[in-house]
Image 1 (cartoon, rainbow, N blue to C red):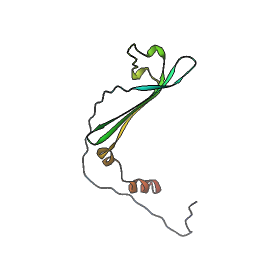
Image 2: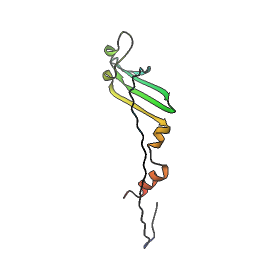
Image 3: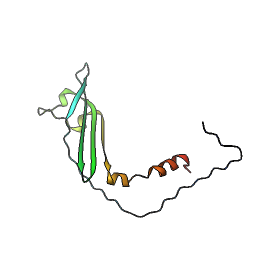
Image 4: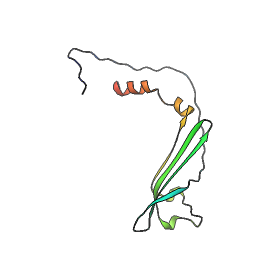
Length: 116
């Protein structure tokens, strides 16, 4: 564990000043191929799907998991996102713009150690 000697004084402060602008406007329509990873006794299937798309030096990732009733699977073998039970749909990315929008590692650590 961590101990601080009696009489020791620990102080900290965090200050950030800067100007800048990042604008992001995205509209994304994707079709994600998913795999049946489990079939329940009642016929419901658990699906998982993942898709990565690189756009302007950014890697965008879409993850989909959930449960689907056989009746909700269309003749074209498609399922709308609103028909996925316990759906976990995650969309994010990493790259130049995503990195700029995150505080630097030192700043993140400082905020954890000295939150006030």
